[in-house]
Image (cartoon, rainbow, N blue to C red; front, side, top):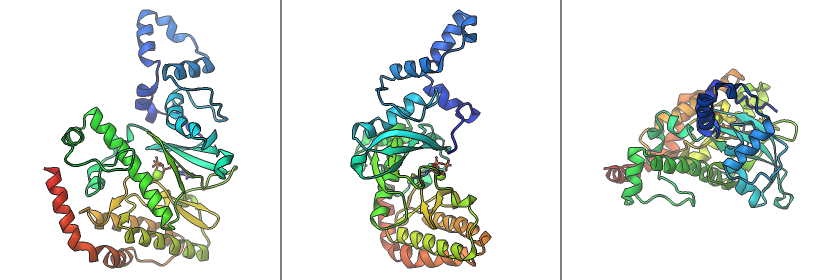
Length: 336
Ligand SMILES: Nc1ncnc2c1ncn2[C@@H]1O[C@H](COP(=O)(O)OP(=O)(O)OP(=O)(O)O)[C@@H](O)[C@H]1O
Ligand SMILES: [Mg+2]
């Protein structure tokens, strides 16, 4: 399975924030320039990282995290080990711009084989452009899945001013929206990974793939015309079920559809949008449908994205337009 190169420039911010030695090292370099030339043993560095983060490194993992990854990863998955959901981290499946996904061995008592742990990059939430568009009309969720009360002025102010505390609240809310969307959709029979557990910075879910291969994104798969038609029907059926539940993915494309054993599984839900209370919902649905159709047209499926999205919107979202208006006005009052 592919692994992430943490020496990549894209991770420099991440490194600066999570390298426990950086401040130390800068100070030492000033005092003693020669010190920067001395190589540090990998194991020593890992142990020091764990110590500095006060983490339980008695957990042995087959996958050996990189130097800047250690504290962050183990802190995020520690709860899953403590709750006897996971016994090992086997590999890093993929490092995305928002999160890293790891393949884990489930605890035998769970009756599951492999699980995927999606561990978020803290900065993702601050870098997400136009995040307000997705947040509109949806509640700010806390770690126990209850919404923050809009009368809680302390939290509302922190969110608006984007203080550190406000950003931490927003971070938890993105994570919890992904987790609750997975739960709702899984219960409704939509093809998503089974949600298993959530921690402060990670979601544990069913692993799509097997011990040798993680399921590839549909984007990298060429389908036979007949299979393409069947998978297209399945995906549009799932989009429709989501809309029935008042949900729109918000970042749907062949990159966020994993293909395994003839089925597509929808992943990556932090920006999930409420079709009933978000004023941009219609455009967001249109973009999702267009991107999905682009892939299937390349695979030989005949489809018209505009008429498909119009049909879905008129069938499931427009009939609720009245209470959209009511909800929006309430939401606007809350914002003031
Ligand atoms: N449940 C899963 N089972 C197997 N692989 C998964 C699972 N969830 C995610 N992945 C893999 O991890 C990748 C990143 O996951 P996801 O899209 O949720 O995060 P992301 O940070 O938004 O990534 P990107 O920036 O690439 O969109 C996916 O493209 C897929 O390869
Ligand atoms: Mg993704």
